[in-house]
Amino acid sequence: MRNFRTLDEFEEEYFRKHPEEIDDYLTEIFQEYAEDNDSGALLASLRVVARVRGISEIAEQIGMTRRGLQKALSSNGNPRLENVNSIMKALGYCLTPTTTNQGSRGDSNMSQKLAPAKVPTPGKILSRELEARGWTQKDLAEIMGRPVQSIDEIIRGSKQITPETAIELSQALGTSPEFWTNLEAKYRLHLVGKEKKEQDIARKSRLYTIAPISELIKNKWIQAADSIDDLERQVCDFFGVSSLDETLQLDVNFRCSEHREPEETSRIAWVKRVENLAKQQAVASFERKKLEAAIPEILACAKQVESIVQIPKLLADLGVHFIIVPHLSKTYLDGAAFYLNSNPVIALTLRYDRIDSFWFTLMHELAHIVLGHQGAYLDNLDALEENDEERAANEKAADWLINPQTLNEFIIRNKKVFSRKVIEEFAQNQNRHPGIILGRLHYYKLVPYKNLKPLLVGVSPILGNSTDNFCDSKLDIL
Image (cartoon, rainbow, N blue to C red):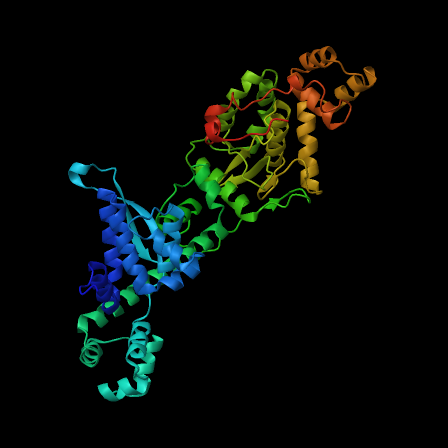
């Protein structure tokens, strides 16, 4: 008959009396395992903790038999990682890798830092101790000379264990006062950490409601941040507010397709990005009459795609900010026109990276300014709102690009049969790029959209230096 106790049994008895030390013990054994890869020692230690917590209960939680769990944690056991992870979860822990600096061992070693997934209240430990002794709350209250209500509040966790109470509990239960003060401290720290995590989640949720954070980061308008404080600060700086309590609003006349409802937060973010970039530009003073007089000079760039590169400087010299910012998801914007102080801002998205779309959108937004339209306009040219200002801007843009009478004669003369040669010759006579003529014929449905698409050259390579995050943007080519 065996008349001695094993080390495992000594450890098991110790941790039954001092369960508050299990956290540090598990962290230490995983750190040792990371250094020496002694799986036998690791399993032996896990076996001790599992016995303290209850082999049968853990086996049931992870879907193993009691015998199977004991075998997995035996000295000859070789459990898979997922089994170890399941066992740790059942014990109330999660495995989180952290980097360690072990001097001569190098900086690349990894250890498992264990964080309790669930921290028991000191009252829970006290309740188990009373149950093991066969005592009631009333018994302990009489021993300590306390009201039963006080003991009940400690067990329910509504009353903290003070140093004085810890001393009385240690005298009544044969433990150290530090045992109870440590339990209380760990539990309160856990509550603070849990509350902070919940607050961080709520704050992050609010941020993602206010702005399309993922897209702001993807477009490098703000930087990814681990700290919620840093992320909030960046968002406030981006929107030009001192606090997120300030309401973010745009007083704009926005148009969109009835079938593709854009998100207001994305629209606000897009306009703010345009505003922020415009504020960095130096432009001349603005006079509306000078802009109107310069329209022919601007249109002279519409003959060759390469001439588009001159547009930003032409407009800046006329006191007009010219910005290209790709549209955000679900906004379906083509362009915008509004004022920043006394200077107009023309913004394009190049949503359709085609020469015809570029020129019509540019001239549509310029028409808003030349015609003296007040306010701000965010335009989806696929689905403009029916109003006098939009109709006037559309008509002015169309007439500027192609003389309506000349175009009508061209259509009648060719009897609705348009070859590439015919279109190129007409474009040459009008000092326009053939893609601009083809785009109009597509719009009138006189030429199928699939026909002659090579004429619809892209403009983004020409305007690369003027495009926000050009290398990272995704433009539609249709």
